[in-house]
Figure 1 (tube, rainbow, N blue to C red):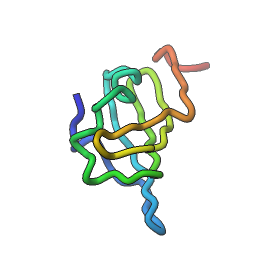
Figure 2 (cartoon, rainbow, N blue to C red):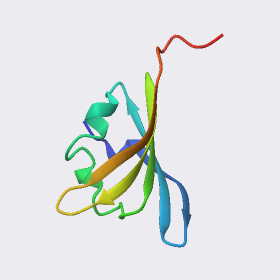
Figure 3 (tube, helix red, strand yellow):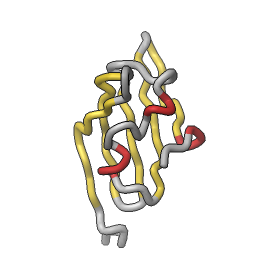
Figure 4 (cartoon, one colour):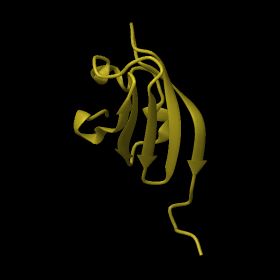
Length: 86
């Protein structure tokens, strides 16, 4: 479930915002799924990017629409085991 307290601005310049969303245990499929970011539609702009970090994965996405629903398309994704690396 989306929580606005987990969304923060990493960088803003010339009308572009790079966001970070801390997804916790939510799977990336849910975070990039339909309507997940709709509660933040007034904050987000088309062309902004969002770095998503989750317990076992991370991804970078671009916001392609904010109306009628927020659409974030993942550009890259890294799914880990959550067990660390050596």
